[in-house]
Each structure stands twice: as C-alpha cells, then as structure tokens.
Length: 363
Image (cartoon, rainbow, N blue to C red; front, side, top):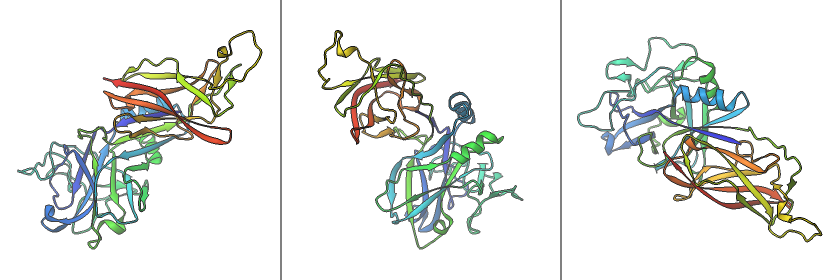
C-alpha cells in the first residue's frame, strides 16, 4: 500500500540538428522527429535525457521497500502533441556515460554550449557521446548523418506502446532498469526515443512535448516506486458487509509537512445499522473495510489523479484499531490540496466512495 515518488534532478533534450546546443534549463522535453521552420525545413530527431538522484533511489529501496517486490515507473506529462500516428512506441534505456545538465535553452542566441547536447556529454568539444569502442551491451543506435544522440544499454530496454485515443502521458515500466541501478555501480539516468523503425523515417513526422524538471507547472518528470507493505490483522473488529456504509477519517490534521509520513485512520460504519437488542451503543462497534480495498489521491484544483487505484500498491491495511493507509507526503507537490477516494467490493459490486477527506501539503 505504498507509493513513493522521486522528482528528477536534471534533464535536457538532445537535438540532432543542433549537435552542440545545450537545453538543460528548458521547461519542455521533446521526443520525435520534425520537418519544419524551427529547423530550417531540415529533418531533425529529438531525444530527452533524464536523471534521478542515486541516493534517493537507494534510500527508497533500502529504507522503505526493504527487499519486497516493487514496481517502478518513469512518468512524464504531456504538454503538446503534433501529427501523432494512430500507433507508435517509445523506448526507454539506461544511459551509459555521465553528463552535465548545463544552463542552456533551445535556440538561445548565441547558442549555449555549457552542457549535454546531441554530440557531447559535458559541453561542446568535451567528452563526445560516441566512444572509440563500446563496452558490452552499450550502443548508440544513431544514423550516420547524425553522429551522437547519447549512448545507452540496449539490453535493458523498456517500451510503452500507444494506440488511438490513448492518453499520451508517459508511464513506462522501468522496474528492471531500477534494479540495475541499485545492483550496479552507476546511474547515468534514462534516455527516451522513438523506436528505430520510426525515428529516422523522413516520411513520417511527429512531435511530443513533455514538461521538464524546470517547468512552472505541477507536472515535472517523476520516478514512481510502488510496493505492497499492507497488513491485515483486525482483532475482534467487524468487517463492513453492506454497500451502504459511511467512511470518514479519525485523525485528519488537514495540513502536513512535505517530509512527513502520515497514517490516516478510517472510521467505517453502516449507514443504516440493523435494529438489535443491546445494552450498549451500536456506534461502539469498530468496523473495517474488506481486505481488497484501495485508495486514490486526486489534486483538488486540477482533478488530476496523483496516485491511482492499484491492486498491489494502494491496498488499505487494517489492525485491531481500524482500517488505515500511509502516505509519503514528499511525493506530493507542496502548497496544494488533495482528496482521498476509497474503492472496495461489497454485495458483488465495486464501490468508489468520496471520503470527503481533504488535506494540504506545505513546505
């Protein structure tokens, strides 16, 4: 029932027609190929590179995940899409070779060459992407007309396929890559690109733009790690059995520091208690939700789903006190309001309930 989000520490886009230009401070990352006025009607390929803190990844796996199975997703949020085909795929690889983010923006005048670019890892004329000889499992997969474009481990590929009417947000499964980062001695980040059969096809042009780490929105790239640490030991409490029930939270403080971990306790009771002869109040009975119950977190302003229902990573726990869920607040954007939704199955129906619980994350 745990989801932990790590925000990117640096990113940039590599442009094949601007082999020396750095874009480390751009608010946008681009994937695709173009033929347009911005490149002087010349064909161009774009590939973003993104890196997350090694210490953040290691701390999450060691101190929080603690050896249980986990999933990891690299997520980017769409800003704009042009001329998108009905079906296409995006590939994600671990980069081989450290790089410098730089301080440039696309089409700076004069051209900024302070960091990573299509041809260089650090700055213009310093550390080319294409080494004299590749180490095992490392490739560049570049067209001879466009030398450069990053080096990456081709045996560690992750792919996300898109079809007509799919959302174009990226949520590619990089669990294998994160295992590799944790078990190996290096972390140079991720490279995203179109699959080879599309990327250098001059008869097919499309462009995807995503928010970067320098965005002024709430949608920077994230690495989302999820695992199941739920427990279910209910003591003498009673499971709720009817679909007509009321759920609220016992301990909502409404405002939470970003670095905190909050345990929210659910108060669950029948909406229409059955009549019975008893010498005590029926409201003294403690209830809990069925074992297969889940939570979801939504941004109240944008109605964006921040943490989605998931059968393994958002399971609701229970103990002898009540049902409960734990939330890592530093995975949420500060100075924003959020709401929690509950999903469970009762009377053969799947029920999604607005818990009416709202809270704010602050710095």
